[in-house]
Amino acid sequence: MEFFAVLPTWKYSGKQIEIINSDSVKVGFIQRKYKNFLNKLIHYSPVTLSFLETINIDGEHNGNHLKIREQSFKSNLIKLKWDIFLNESKFLLEDKTKINTNPRMVYYKNNKKYVFKKDIFNRTCEISFNENIYATIKIDKKIPPTLKTITKTDDLTIIELLGIYYIINLAY
Image 1: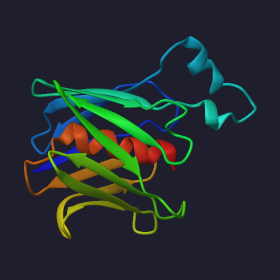
Image 2 (image 1 turned 90 degrees about the horizontal axis):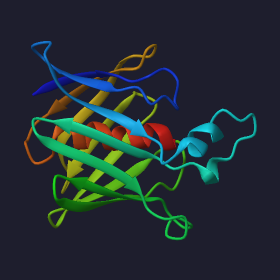
Image 3 (image 1 turned 180 degrees about the horizontal axis):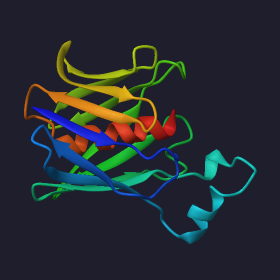
Image 4 (image 1 turned 90 degrees about the vertical axis):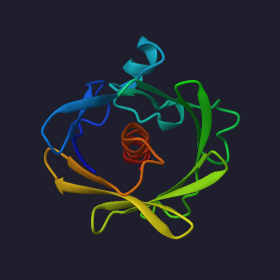
């Protein structure tokens, strides 16, 4: 299945990102959420305070509700981690990046380990499990960043894929 989305040009925008299927029908959305007004205000300051930044995302698709919440500051001292709530289930997303130009995230869902590998040179992100590619996210246009997502299986929902990709995009 193919899905399309247009990311906001400004990285800290709280605007809804619509998910559109191949028939040009809106099927869902993802949106960045801030914990409070002070957290949002930090992004307008001229001084970069990235250690105070938290990335939280909400989304909805076909009755599935997604909440991605960054774990506490203490648990994120070594590697970044997020809790992903899909309806009533809780999963873990962990940063395994060693070099900033080659970001990798591991998503643990139902005793499976999905690896998100973003390649900044050919502008793609591959989602794999046991060396099999389950989905591909490709940037079609740079301005505004337009994404084309091709899924080969229904193991991961489109809001999970785009929500995790948006986290990778915000973090790196």
